[in-house]
Length: 251
Image (cartoon, rainbow, N blue to C red; front, side, top):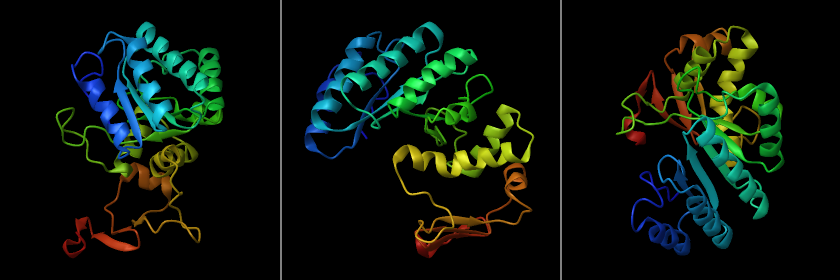
């Protein structure tokens, strides 16, 4: 992934670095951040990123924090370029803070376009006003992933990459109460990201990736609420953590 976190257009030399990255063949995705508020050059940034994606056969991930009059034109610009360049299924928009404030009718219209072009979205459930309406988007066929952003870095000291914790936060900020709603939060964290990235679903069916956790609980809803200690964490068929601690000889 070649993703300039400090602008594509405003930082001299970034465009050349993106071109070098895709020409090298070592990246699968390229992206950009806030074409209007960060770069102040929506068309220039999107034309560059989407043009390179089209020419070199890579995917696109745009991080969009802008809201309202700044955010929606960017999202529509992404939809238009995805359609024009036949990049269906190869575009992701992360955060998308402009979507939660839409009316139901507006959301339905934009969700239809996203689903038709298989443009996926991701959220980190930062707050009640900024979290994507995951359930409604999924009802329309939009792939939505839940992720952990800013993992102890300069963006935020609070990220911990614990997806059970992130599922708990999703339930908290969206005010869910019912068992099925809590289960949906778990599934967004456990499977949503895999769907966005085109990875196999890691469940307990034969042939699934051997990635799972063992916890003590009465069921998924209670596990999401209480976040019990992971008794066992298995990745790729290997025990990597036991009783909440890394297994050192597996590192």
